[in-house]
Length: 421
Image 1 (cartoon, helix red, strand yellow):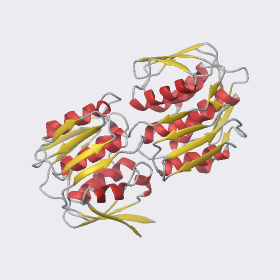
Image 2 (cartoon, helix red, strand yellow; image 1 turned 135 degrees about the vertical axis):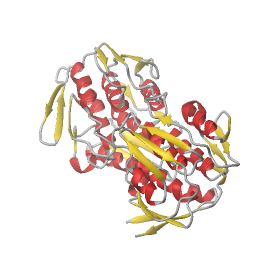
Image 3 (cartoon, helix red, strand yellow; image 1 turned 90 degrees about the horizontal axis):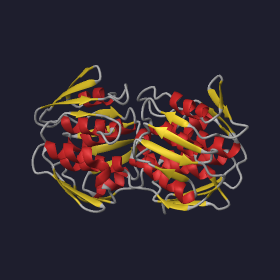
Image 4 (cartoon, helix red, strand yellow; image 1 turned 30 degrees about the horizontal axis):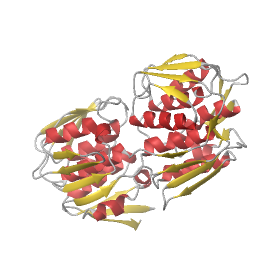
């Protein structure tokens, strides 16, 4: 086991390059299963634990997959798929493993997958995925700890309305429908940039998808898709995390390889809090010359304020001037970082799905833990501004979503290192 040791009080300054998007690369790697005739090569793939896990999943399916973490490239040869069953020990480690079900149904006509795991931030039911597969003509069987889907006669295009704009369900249905017979229309889909990136990659492979990023996606099924080269979009949540870090430490940071269009609500709230922000074509410059003012945030599906930035903003509000409200509408169990922040001296009260954060002048370093991926990022941010030493444990959660976090923060002047427990 390892932990992060942070000595707070250092102002961040310099430049940092954002890696490829975790939430885009995982579904796109799953989509490589649809590629025949030629291998796929993905560029700007972040060196994350989740990427290594999904590589193992593909290998268990009999697919050739290789990841070069130094060059950030991922290659897949899915011309032959030897198995349509994903083992429990891998799927329980990462919820995104469930995204192979759509491609397997389309390519093999069947898929058997263990019930997924991942961060414990809420129920995140998979019923919308299954309803979509059933609407496309698949037969679903749920056993003890696994789900089996079969479409012996192939998938058929249809109209699908999602009760909630679920990102995972949209992605899984999109991949399955890309090779279904006829046209599929997904109404009320998720509109995240990662959905658009997946659709762009599928179209490069030969799919016929229109409307990704809007409230209706139309897919005209094709009989075959071919492996292709593709570059993953930058990670908007990683970029947002460094933007908050710059504001919290009253720093001056230029964030390269970032798309400001994907970060509008984060930029708006940081400006409201008092940060200065300049947007360029592929970079964002953030600086602050005084303590941030408290703001209210409410998480919503894209293009609203991202739930994946809620914990980081709460860390900032903990030392801001005034009182801010944080309302979580996407996941019902995403305040687990509150107790850890309170250990450092934060003044936070939870009332249902809203947290009331009254800013304090200083946080104090102590031993805390990363209860999930974004909570871990929040504890690191809190450690950057806390008095004394902060030790963050359970950092395997952080490794699932932040590429070279320690090296990047050290490059900006932070005093942070990984040590053995």
